[in-house]
View: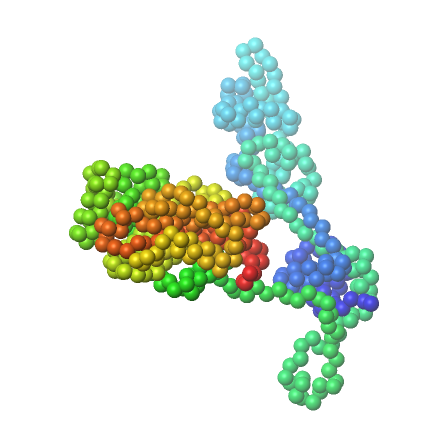
Length: 491
């Protein structure tokens, strides 16, 4: 059975039969097609084994900076010969005035090689005399390049002249351009000799169907096995989908989302969470500070006084308000939730916050300087660590992570503290995810929060890595369209 061809394919085959070995540009011109049509048609014909593409590299040459200068002033050996034409005979000392000192030896050598000069040794000095001054092959090539601008190396007959100019710095510039040449295969030649099977209408209009000539219309055959055009509909980023999923799960568990700014005073980012002002996390290598910028107001006088007293009592140092006013790019979202609790002082609450945080860390396969975190708290009179573990287990289950365990750990502002671990089946090992615990009294009491507060937080990128089976967190931000289009919307 012969293959059904599109009219574009027929035009390309017909053109290649008349003039084989054409570039894409030549094919578009000869077949009277747009470049996009040529590219599309060639891909179709390649799939049907009717055309073949041969890649080649074309080298071309043009004048460089010094070559253009030589065109205007002459090559060093030409300037030497012109000087001799005036003086007929001169010594080496006199001839040095003809060209710069750095070019003199090259001028002598090239002029002698061209048969332009003769050198006679005398007692006091070498004498240079003029023999001939016919143009050299290098000069002819320079003039040719000046006239044509750029010449393919294959068109240059005197390759020795080209090699000579290539040895001179910045006299000529060599460029290479890769080109693709299209030709018919044996099967394509056979197809080109057969009658066209694409005759007939390929599009039906309303006029054709309603004008009473529908039965007279000849329709072109349709290749039902031809690949359909692949369309990639607009969609949200997979990481954004995970963030939305996290948000939806906590809302379904009865939580309310709160918002906060990316820039926070050190008071809420560190001091309110009982992080001492000399803690390593506050140093420049861990935190992004806004240079020479301070908050005019960080909290109420009562909040500042009680937090200050808590630090002095717990950490035994002189707490400084000026340090607490320094503005930072928030290192976690807990500063948003603790500020909300300090302002509202609820007896019971379920709140969470999702957003970007910043850490001044070295970028690696598992660390970024900017990433997304979810932070949340539960406030209640009788809430316990068991409630927090159950809440986290329920969240992970809803995210599709079933194998979970908890390890005791240390965090500056919670006690007791736990680290949640999720088993990665593909890697065959446990992976750290969220940190959690109960806020220490040094955090809650100065802010007037009386009931226990369960708190947790963690990076959303790590969850995304597990869901999408990625080994490098940077892949989430690599803009790899192939991967972005392949991630299923629902898993």
